[in-house]
Image 1 (cartoon, helix red, strand yellow):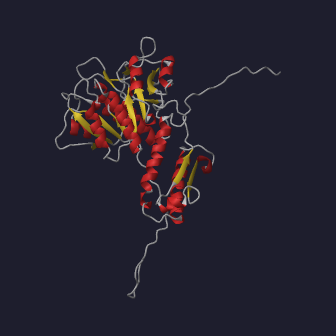
Image 2 (image 1 turned 180 degrees about the horizontal axis):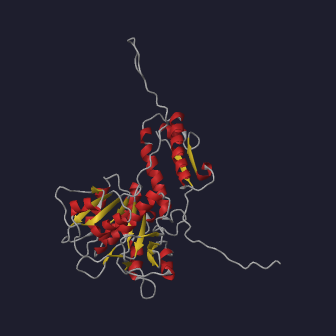
Image 3 (image 1 turned 180 degrees about the vertical axis):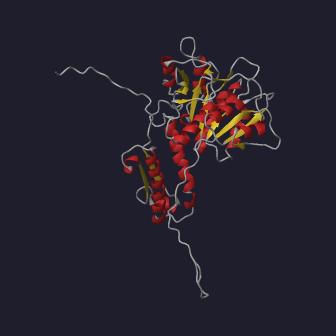
Length: 392
């Protein structure tokens, strides 16, 4: 408030537009792995916007069993954009799980990434399970991230009798906690043979899948399942999977689904699964549902930061309720939420006697309850046929 003492004309601007929730990015991956070079001036995570930027900073391939460069190529071939890269060393580096868990610790200080993948971790002789569980816990703790895991080896999905000991070990090793914050994909992909070779290069799938996430998010929205999408830059798979083979991968007794990548005649190589590692859970079964909630939670959290230390009264509550409702209405109109009307798609409650007690107000807590009816993918399309009896 200006203290008017001198005669004259004073101009004041009055804010009339309500505060709004800004949608955060949803598909910015953090790649962790082996690079051809690790520039001395680059420490921690480095942001890139193209394959050329990666090559200028880190070089190209780093050996036959270094998968980061090929994964980033597939990321950009399938629609990727901005990304972050962390080098755990070069081709001569002796890999261990600590290199990857240290990278995950460093990632806590980088706010922008929303996806985590580490294709070179499949080369760990021991400790892969520790890295995977640490990554899942990292995503749970920060709430705004999702982990894309690779099948542990190129031909591990199917055994001689339809079940793989390596996949069984993977499901055991990944544990039981924070599984809705990650999804696993396999088998590995075959990409065009390098110059001078007749054999295609075999690469874990996570880089290409991250590109699919980015492409689907941009074209349809994070609420669209990143599946039934063909992969670019892929000439084949290390393992052929049919409907029967996929049954035990997609629906596991413990819920740890493996999303299959399959080749279909006339369609190419498609991502043919959309489940999290918590595949038997009714709330968090699908990748798109988990990532939609991550989007909403992170967007609302960042946009309501201005409320901290504001008066905890009805004026503030109404402002917060309105901005969240406007944001969710926008999501509903885009098709992210189910319901014929906004009130069927979501609710936002805040207020004394509704979400807070007088004691909450005294202790400085403003509590907002938000509920969303997320759309879910039609994973099983059932079309029933029957004979129609002749009537004349």
